[in-house]
Image (cartoon, rainbow, N blue to C red; front, side, top):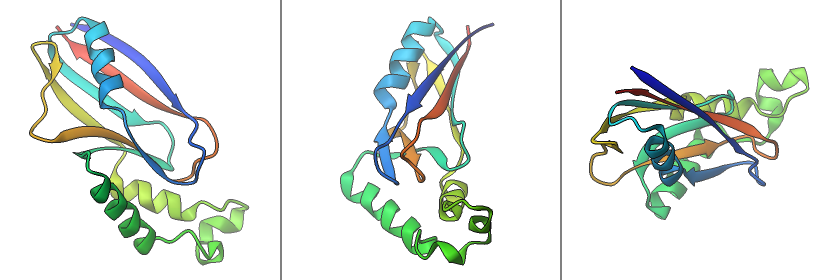
Length: 139
């Protein structure tokens, strides 16, 4: 069995954003040379997410509206976590809802998606660099 690891770095210039990283992950799978296996993609920060869904702008805005309604950023005083001097209690909750990672099968050297599936990086506490791990394993 072989493995290939790469790290992506994101420095989102706003507090929240959703970035389609499918093409980048596909390039890494291709570079790995692995034809049959699995690809793990995970956010390495507890205020960011990796998830799979449809690349439709209205849906991405719906996610953002839902998450902001569920755990609004303001007022920051509503979160006990923020008593530590942070202002990102909401971002931790949003990450928990959207998830940490995805695993996608690799078949014939390509990500084996269902219809419309795309991989997204979700940022909930931007304005600083954060990493995403991409690990490809298989034969």
